[in-house]
Length: 444
Ligand code: NDP
Image (tube, rainbow, N blue to C red):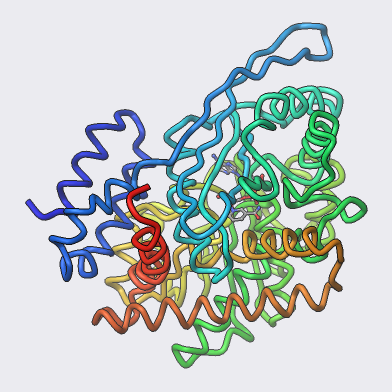
């Protein structure tokens, strides 16, 4: 059996009940096969892949808090510090009832390569909890965040591990966590990113993942001789990534006709109204059923369906495994040009293969959504030098980073004879830098 197959089999055996982690490892290692097989004996002797798929350490802890009725609630908290070869651990905190150790490991593993791709000195980590902020009062969210950090604070720090937002963790949650960290440690340091602007946050961080997705999509289309201006797009999700992806898409001349949440989806033939979306989701914290009150011409449908609409671009920006094989078939039948992932691993392996085989330009999340973590690293830099850069300065750096990522992944794919396979290109480009650093640092 080849080394890659051996390691995949061992990961499945050693980490039972973690299908998302298996899926992420398979996707990455399959596309690294050419690189590994060119030097298989050395990789095997150094157990390079075993070290790559085993987190450096992981924490699992109890998070007790009291709800508004006086009832004690108990959640589970996680932080996986996956790989620090190229910098301090960096990756978000996900607050969602579906969170378990397998989900956090899949996200942490992906984060290693994504962070490497940004060209910035950040290692890979991820964390979160099965707490659901939806429907909770501000006081309940604060009680949870304070309890969560009361345990986590021992393991994080501006130069060791710097968490950020993710699903369910926005500016409100980061604010409460930061306050508790400061209270416990007495340190005013850049330990979390995605902070409010009045206490060390970076301009353009809120917009960064969505904007970055569109900068990469625009450049990738250009590389393939196509102009984004005038295209139509379907977006899924209506959270942070989706909202700013829609906004930037519109600025680039794209008409976005859908968005969704976990209950249903909206079709707006005139183009999604971003101001209405922000008011519903960010101010009222309400459901998308409200959208019709702002845009009578739009349609609301229960369940899934954004990928059934005929568009040029599909931008999945909600969650993992939300674009299935049937959706890919439907998109291809409708003549889609490109699928670029705003979320982490939103496309199943079968759907990805189908899209690639049918000539669709496919950009994986670890490249396409890297603008978020890249701008988080820019926030770390600003915190370290105790300065704040202007919106335009951060946005220009973000754009440069996304353009570089686009070329790096395209070039890496080409170097290994897989031109146009951006999944392989992103994995290889991210892997090369991490492996160089791991080799140079010895067996640690
Ligand atoms: P948000 O919590 O702001 O929004 C998530 C959106 O996805 C919401 O519309 C939510 O709907 C929907 N959603 C969540 N879970 C599900 C589900 N199981 N089924 C259907 N819809 C769901 O999160 P973000 O926008 O920050 O994150 C979205 C994706 O992007 C995630 O994969 C995240 O890991 C990734 N990402 C985020 C980055 C960031 O900077 N925020 C950076 C890089 C990647 P509802 O409101 O009903 O829950």
